[in-house]
Length: 356
Image (cartoon, rainbow, N blue to C red; front, side, top):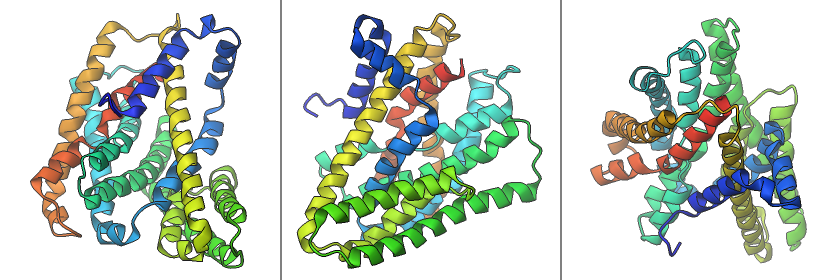
């Protein structure tokens, strides 16, 4: 943007003001309040398929294939390490260690905050003409981070709720959620590929086929007895379509399909950040809000420490990352350390407000 401020930051701040002053906006304020009380699962069902699938579908498969090993390291062991260090940070540096915030809850927080959100950073890299390989790696890490972070979150959530799980239970749950999600995405991708092969020069049907497949698969994964990761299923479906499904889309419809999905992704991104801002604005002005001035100062301290944690984890795995794919220079280590964490303050604030 011409202001130099990331688009997502601007619309989040706009949403905060809407949340704070919604009572003065008449009928619009009533609508804003209704939106802010929507069930969280409904919001996930509406927005996640659009955001995840659009990003995976528009990836460059050849570059992604070369960087797949790096992506797995950054979205796997790096994420787990960041989760643990983030939990230790909250407990021992910022002293969130009371009975209402046990270490299991700190790990839960760490699993959420360690997942990257590279939207603004990737846009900035593209504007500066940075390497597409770096942008693809950051986007790929984000895609798999979303899935692995959600799987880790769901496993830890059972501990927070007081359930007793054995080591075998944890391993099986992790394998079922992650492996089952990927398998489901591939199977749906094969089905969609066969359907698209039978449609000729009808961009409406081709677009609708991808949309229906995306949303129905996510609902089947998350809302039925399958109990697999819908996010990883979306990633697998999007990457499968990128690799081989695109060739089944007729040449006359290809641009239309990409333009429609680009618009869907843009609108979903816009609405989810506005809603996040509205919820933060409403909760921050709540009379029962337990967040004090000290917590807001700690928020910026958390933001700084998270950068050091991410830098440390990338540096720890740098010898491996250098030998995979296209390699990784020290300048890229610094860029990757910064990527995705620009939204950490907003996410931390949202989590703290919600927890209160």
